[in-house]
Amino acid sequence: NVDFAIVSGSQLVTLRAQGGRATAVFATFQKSPRALVVKWDSSYQTIEELWRSDGTIMAQNGLPFIKWLNQSLGKSNLKFIPYTGSFAPFLQNTVVGMQAFATAEPVQLESDGIRTRVFLVADAGFNPYDVIVAVSDRLLEQEPELVTKMVRAMTRGWQDYLASPQPTNKTIGKLNPDFSPRTLEIAAAALSNFLVSEDTKSNRLGWMTESRWTSLQDKLVSLGELDPERRKEIGRIFLNPAWSKDSEPSADETQPVSKGSESASDA
Image 1: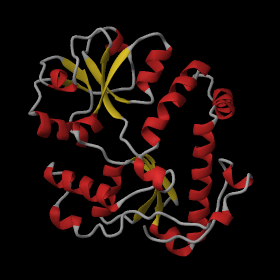
Image 2 (image 1 turned 120 degrees about the horizontal axis):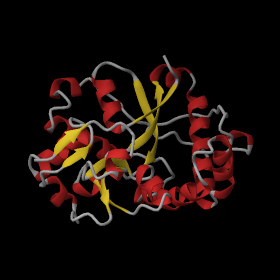
Image 3 (image 1 turned 30 degrees about the horizontal axis):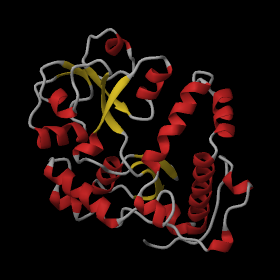
């Protein structure tokens, strides 16, 4: 019952396979930030070494990327305990590592003076789009111009942030004092590695391709996360809204509360 939602690639595939009707219109993270993290002085130098150890890790066993690691690196001997969002077990060495979002937990830890080693699951072969803006098919059909204007505004907003994050970081810091200027500075410096790809360089930020979505679905089928028969029901899962060069968003359209419009077309 929502018009727009932030989802992962796997979540959207599952939703559509189960009959839900939402379409991806902007893939913020072109490279997946899902990761496993260890302390810098850990003996584990690679994700393979960590995966083949018999230590305890704080991660949600059963997540698609965990299943992928089991499939690609072999079934792990790691002992899993639930990830609660607390750093305490990690800091107290109760666990040898934990799951993370590369631009979140490691950034906060670095800001607090704790160096980490980040193993990106994308580098191990599981690299779906992430932090995807999806829109209900109902809204997309009824108000395609609204959807396109929204995507235009997000594109411009991210372009401006990557070029000069300081003004936005000041606002974020005022709204959420838990984010220190140092934390926001580190996060901003890391973002372009995940938001910018060859596809976005050739097109625009948030751009998606059929091959990336097909690859994800193939992997989810191989992991038992997606039934081959239900896959046939997914249909169109993404759309790259298009607009002309002379209809770039105005300043008002790039504000966070903006609602926009323009025609949408298939990629």
